[in-house]
Amino acid sequence: MELFARQDIYDSLPGKISLFLGGPLCAPVFLAVMGYFLASSQKKLSYYFKRGFILFLTGMLLNIGRTINLFHYIYSGQSNVDPLFYVFGVDILLLAGLSIIIIGLLQLIFHRNYFFYFLIAIIIASVTPFLPVFASGQTGLSYCNAFLWGIFDWSYFPLFPWFSYVLTGYAFFLFSEKIHLPTKIKPGIKLALILPSVIISIFTITYASKITHALNGADGYYHHGILFFAWMLMFMSGYILTASFIEDYTGRLSLVRLVKWIGKNVTAFYVFQWLIIGNIATDIYKTLDGIYLILWFFGVMIVSCGLTFFWEKLRCVCVHRKEKK
Image (cartoon, rainbow, N blue to C red; front, side, top):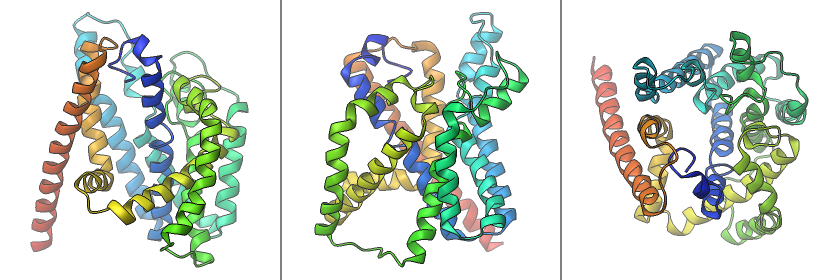
């Protein structure tokens, strides 16, 4: 929707719905789940540095890979945009890499005290709108600034405020471990817990959709503050319980199993879909509507699923051979 759809479609109700589905349901959940499993793993500091560096490098390579077609346009004289704008775009894999490294360092200070991780999350979300931008234009300093905070066009997922979601997931695991939160909750209780989130979401959906549709800017999705962060925590709690409720009753359905498989292999799927979308968007940027958007959506989904499937098979074969040696 963001790259293929005509501007009038992007600004329409279907466009706003699409961007909402691609907002609260995606990046915050991905980051919180990542934080949750980082807390459960209890790895050594060297693991966090290694894993974080690999994810950061993957993010940089993805930035380059998904703009190869655009680079061709630039160096053939058909476009005069700055390639660094795309090479150093602060996307979610770069954020994930930095977050993992910082979590490893924070463990040395706060160990497994959930209170301090959640407190830092609240502080980060609170101060984000007030942090001074120490660079302007497209300079080396501004590219560094964009990784931390600041309203730059290429800063999609800076550490402030997005690291808050990693810390929240991390703190939640530690908290649930400390109070021995049950992993299984009866469906009736789940439904009762979901209802408040649903009711609040219905009455505040206009507020949230304005932010997810704005994307950039001081009040946009990429640079939101404490109020939207609090809204996201409320929304995520209901969303996660709903997903669990669906799993209880429809977990064996083919469509649900497909969604779970994509979730399990989300990083590879994300990389493949962006390699496809990014390069194709250079030729059809904001030109499609109606049935063409739907066809492209399913086309990209199918190809991304196929590539992810073969990638996982290849990875399993390599791991098997390594184990045999």
